[in-house]
Image (cartoon, rainbow, N blue to C red; front, top):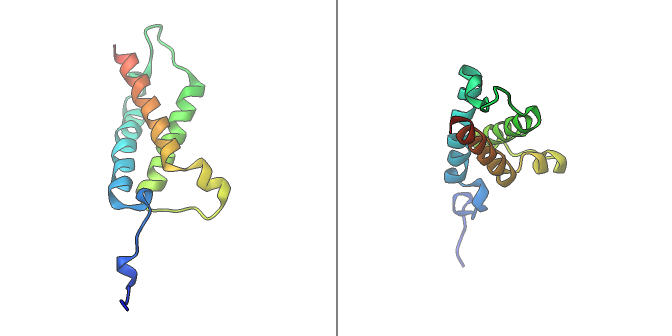
Amino acid sequence: MRNRSVTTEVRPLLRRPWSRALSLLLASPLALLLLIHPAAYLDDQGGYSHSLLMLVMLGISGGFVHGVGFDPYSRLWRTIFHPLGCWLLLGLGYLILWRAQG
């Protein structure tokens, strides 16, 4: 019989270091760009969608929550800040940025 220590415990994919690093790497540039140069998100008419940017900011928040290693206890907060949903919202942010630059 083998003695398993805590360090050999199998972790789910979304709790591994590479997924947390991915969350930070996706969220950091968008957050910095929104803070330093928010005009980068303006479309060709000089406006932007507040509702879409709110979703992007939720994705940025979730990216930081997951990226720093915080795991919420409440089912509601786990659902809101789930990494897969946040990655989709971060992708939306990069899509908005790409379309605004084009």
